[in-house]
Length: 226
Image (cartoon, rainbow, N blue to C red):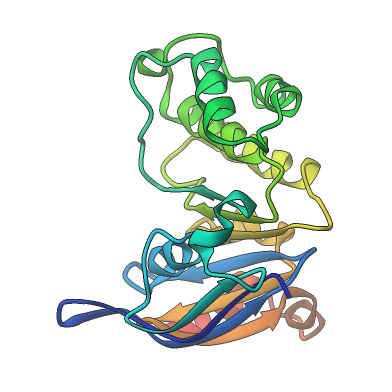
């Protein structure tokens, strides 16, 4: 087992982001973390990344708290948060200084595959920015990759490139957790599907089992959450 949430509740004042949430994540899995807006997806990813602390319950990554194992966690937020002046070269220097596990060779290969232009972040399109930020995260030698809406609001070509890069960069010792609203496009890479509804786990299923019943991940999403 790579990571675990045990009876985790996270409160924001009177509102709960997640409620009594328990799940386990294993190496070699590509997990789709799905749900409607406000279902708790981002809260769950931030808890696993050590960016939030649970109000109740326990979060573990490789047997320790996420903050004690930050070097094993690569997190891509849904925020557009790079400095406007940064180029891909600036981003490489930034990541090399911040993360000892950052792999410059892999980063440059990803930049080429994702067709990220050598220009400032300010001058890039939204899709190019998303591809740059993904390359920065995937170039780390981490064990747990947490991607929050990497496909949201970008063009079809960028989404296709991002999905292909996730397949090409697959590593058996790692676990990938991908939150997305683009269920139809991304479901082909999911081995396991977690559906959240109002901060609770509504379904935990293998995608193969769903398909054996003649049901797509999108079908299950609609059935469980409608």
